[in-house]
Image 1 (cartoon, one colour):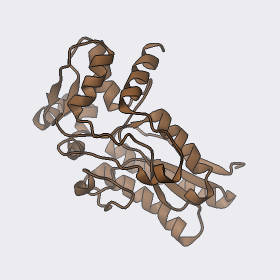
Image 2 (tube, rainbow, N blue to C red; image 1 turned 90 degrees about the vertical axis):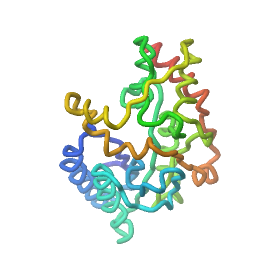
Image 3 (cartoon, rainbow, N blue to C red; image 1 turned 135 degrees about the vertical axis):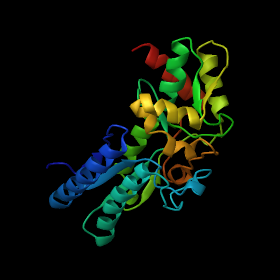
Image 4 (cartoon, one colour; image 1 turned 120 degrees about the vertical axis):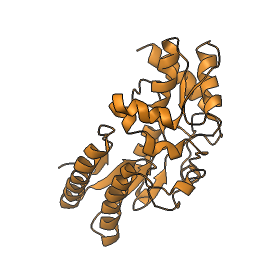
Length: 252
């Protein structure tokens, strides 16, 4: 294979059936290749494995009990990796990110629902309750931090949360940052659960949303203090991240 470190960063279509079909096969193939060629393995993961009650303050030690079908897939593949680590056959780590945002990231909730709607002279949208706090990881920070982890010998055989601003911003406060930078009135349109279910009849991606709304009906805080203590890394603030996201997305 020729690689000392293998990074699995792929993202499949946001569809439960696709995940159930493709993720276990890809994870098993990647693990087997790394074992065969004695390569270290870095897996870029999300927070779907955590118990619903852990969402208001997630750490690497939060209870693993996924409340969604997508989370069950993520637990299955994370267990595959961790079991091989425990057996001593594999050297690997899991790097977890909160919901993410960043320049030209068309899969980001903030770009899809906030930035793009403002660009179209529409109200930015938020799921369920914009008064709840919600952490977001800045993608350039996530990329740099994942590379740092992959090159740190003492980082392996454990789970890491990627660096994320510690400030607790509500949905409204995050939207206000975009509105100020884009020089528009600060407004928000809420998408309630009943509307998501109706939209799901007509829009495939919306059909995938209701099971994940537990992440928006309560505070959602992603604690990356373990990474902060280990690495001398300057995490991008939400204010600076939103500014850079708008500037760099607009210019490309």
